Image (cartoon, rainbow, N blue to C red):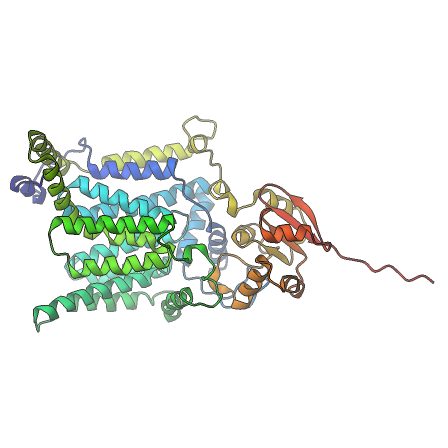
Length: 536
């Protein structure tokens, strides 16, 4: 790939060009690829959506935020801070009015918006829509690990927007503080990852300060805008129903994540480290190696802040699987500044400036100029309209979403988190009390049975005391006192997957009997022994 010559660069920088609706843009094609793949090839997941939906319904009914763990009988009075309340209200509102397919389409759209913002961020510096498309698709691949109907989808969008603002300190002009205030005020009510946004601003401020100190400059005026951004964002994060407690909460979450004690994060898969020998760890390593290839091949000194971004978010990704998407987003600025030059040098080296190289260089320059003339929104708009039609069509239609994907409802997206047959069986019962449930099923039980029944544990990790987690894992792992734990909590029903160690152990216990079983779940009931009356 050849570098764009001066005349093409001038066209790219110019806004005085005639734009055409009919010209397909690389941006549009990238958006279409993301929408199509995430709709039909890689389905969005619905692992944790159930308790989010119930929480949103509860907030709309009460017009207030719950303060205690009302969904559980094991920690009924334990403090609960619903820090993602606005995302939960939005999710339930869409589910309530547009149904499950509407919610699925909304989740796909949120992911596509994040990818579109990544493309717009990178195209400023790459001077090549094709390089920006490649970087966007790589970031989208990294984001697939958290491609689920969760408030995290909003967090990705806010994170990209903050990265935009930090890369352009003058963006927004005089109303920049207002824009940042609104951005972080919304972020703090949608998802707890706003704390990463605050850290991002501090990282840019620290990098700018380091550059100034190394150069020997005594005027630190370039650092002040970042400090102002941080103060504005910090104040905005307190504008939540939880006020300062909402600001402190993510810090407690982080402290728990790095704790060696048994708590609500140390045993959750998405908070586990990505080891170098694991597929996810290897994906992180290859992505970082690609970033290194881009930097070294460009022969340009990287900005200190970009090195800081790679180091910081690579550390986050290796220490916690759930942070892998953030690395994919954060590294895009590095790739956008270095990858075009590196690929251009590599292409010229491989072809040695042959006729083929010159031909492809000219084609690239012409296509870049043509892409600049396009409006860019036609293809995404047509794709969205097409998807709306596909989602609205009845299942009997051969091109409907349901017929093409075989997804009829949310449980079809993550069947391991919603034991359909078991829930139908349990719903027939008059009372649902003292159920020791499998951890992953807690959200589905909350959505289906509350307030008639409450769970022992669920995925709302932060609203249970450590004792409950220790007791759960004592039973789950068949530790020495697992029977005593069940007796202490007066458990009379156990709902568990068929292949778990606990299920196999209960089959051998004379005090428990199987009352329901299918491929997904087994339901046990305690056998109550009735003393025989004494003879006269």
